[in-house]
Amino acid sequence: MPPLPDLLPPDIRYLLERETQTMRVTIVGTGYVGLVTGVCLADTGNHVIGLDVDAGKVERLNRGECTIYEPGLTDLLVANLAAGRFRATTNLKEAVEHAEIIFIAIGTPPKADGSADLSMIEKAVQDIARAVNKKTVMVMKSTVPVGTCQRVESLVTPLARHPVIVVSNPEFLKEGSAVDDFQRPDRVVIGSEDADAARIMQELYQPFVRNRHPILVVRRAASEMIKYAANCYLSTRISFINQIANICEALGIDVDEVRSGIGYDARIGSHFMYPGAGYGGSCFPKDVQAMYHVAKAAGVEADLLSAVHQVNERQKNLLVERVRAHFKGDLTGRTFALWGIAFKPKTDDIREAPALRIIDGLLAAGAKIRASDPKALDHLRQEYGARVEYFTDAYAAVKGADALIICTEWNEFRSPDFDRIRESLKKPLIFDGRNLYSCSQMQARGFTYYSIGRPRVDGR
Ligand SMILES: NC(=O)c1ccc[n+]([C@@H]2O[C@H](COP(=O)([O-])OP(=O)(O)OC[C@H]3O[C@@H](n4cnc5c(N)ncnc54)[C@H](O)[C@@H]3O)[C@@H](O)[C@H]2O)c1
Image 1 (cartoon, helix red, strand yellow):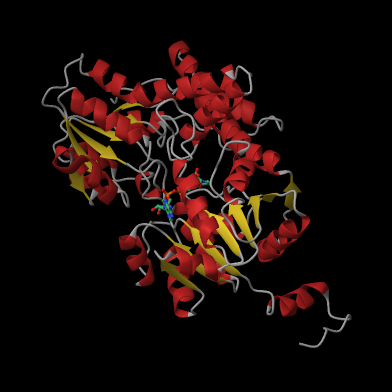
Image 2: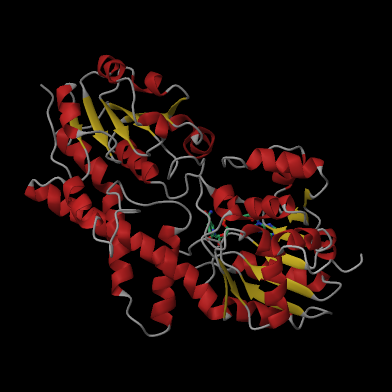
């Protein structure tokens, strides 16, 4: 292709140049992060293979069936399969030989002591190293403790016949808005000591930062630390407001008033500070604990992080304690409708969801559960089988129940038909773990209404 004339405006020039600069990418692990990353990179013209050990998942993806619920993802998957830019495989050799850039997006679950289990990653990178047939950039997308990229490099170097440059590139997407977050990130963080690898990564991400949000290139260890620091800070905000909420409640103060009073302080803000039944998901709980262990190994007592974790553990038990207290300790034979199982709205992910703690507590106390969730019932059924009843119709779940418990703030639950709920329940009783409704309105509607950090109201 002849050189482009210099007079072209930079944006157009860049677009024309891109035509020739698409890359061959492999994503190892097609879960929540890997699938979104793979499909979004394919959508900007790259040729992407998603490698997974789960043959069923691979088959479904190649049929255009999304294996997770994430708004907008199915359309992108189908379009990029049709365009021949994305496909999934279980064949490691084929996937490795295809790519100049290999992303690792495998799970890093917590071990029994809370530290990160890297065994799946370590096995995968060694298998990949044996298969590389050219110089390759290996990108650590998984959330890993500081020092992991360096360790991975030392594992792969003796096994690979060609140089493997390991780069850190933590992911900040939020389940429920993952596609949007990936396509319009607040920032992209690249940890690399290798200038060429950093440049390739910057090029790969250019289409996603047209909004002028930055691509930060830092050292690998700093990049690994940024991800943990971000998740620890966000978890801290939640545990902070939950602790304040509990104090407010004991003192008869409405935490909503306090929240707006502190939120207008520009140094604080009211975003990401909602009192509730605790944080869950596959990231915050494990990352706070993993960071604690990283600190401990470095000889630093991370007592703030251990408190953040403890506050959250207590908070996840709060609704069950409240239900028990309301029924004077005896829940035998009682039935509870649960609205919202996913750890947050707009996802089907139930890992570490507060709802699971509530279900376990109520089942152990001899109660029955009628669960409803717009997207997460299949996952719940896989874990609880016949121990729980499942309802796609949220109102059907409430029928004949002793109380309604709200665990996830899906939009569907924000303005429900309260008359229908009141008529369906044995008594008008709601335990709200997400503060969806106004206390005064619930009182006027005749409900006994418990929420988090706000005085209980008893309907007239
Ligand atoms: N889920 C999130 O919101 C999120 C956000 C940011 C970062 N992260 C981090 O990203 C990483 C992945 O998280 P996730 O939620 O996508 O996990 P996940 O469990 O949804 O997906 C992991 C995938 O890897 C596959 N896999 C396991 N071993 C493999 C191997 N050897 N070869 C190929 N595939 C293999 C699994 O079958 C699965 O499909 C974690 O470290 C997590 O902390 C997650």
